[in-house]
Length: 266
Image 1 (cartoon, rainbow, N blue to C red):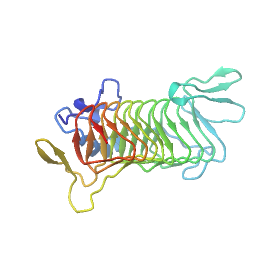
Image 2: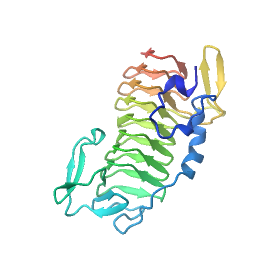
Image 3: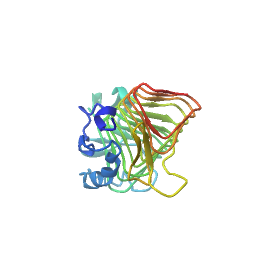
């Protein structure tokens, strides 16, 4: 019931070693730090890409090179639909990633996939792994140990820390996501907040019909199965698990515990 398979289709996710079929789904968060610390990151050292400072000018990453955007043509189409294009003398630089002026990268453990867009004002602290054709929008704040699959969105003034996004997961607007996992095709309505810390001391408990389980974690936000949707200004209590295709309606606070697939929380 609480295995990764019951929440996610992991067949195409490139970071499946985070998940164990025999352990509860939240143990992926316990493995996340070690997994990301051992990941092999590209070297992004260049005067064009100063660490910890707002970029003075837009840069392009392509086939291991860090290129100035000056002289290149950039078409800012829908990143998640692979419509971001960079051209040099009319030829497309396939898979080029764009880091816009005004964004900030902090630390040497940052991996940006093919066709990624990092917009002005975004701040990414290492370690971070951003999958192909994902978009980090203006004002996004990635606080470290953030891992996304492909075609994801971390949106305007959205804060993320120690969390996992599967492919096509989107948190487009004004969200807080801490110690959480978003399944494939999850979409968060504007203003969604995941509480991840109990007021009282002790580990977060996960309530089920068979009794409460100790997560072993002081901090545990939400785990949303594939295709879960949340409405605007919704909130989850620590240790909220929503099964596949569940709905959390607008202005609703989800109680802690496990909610089966296709549950509608009002």
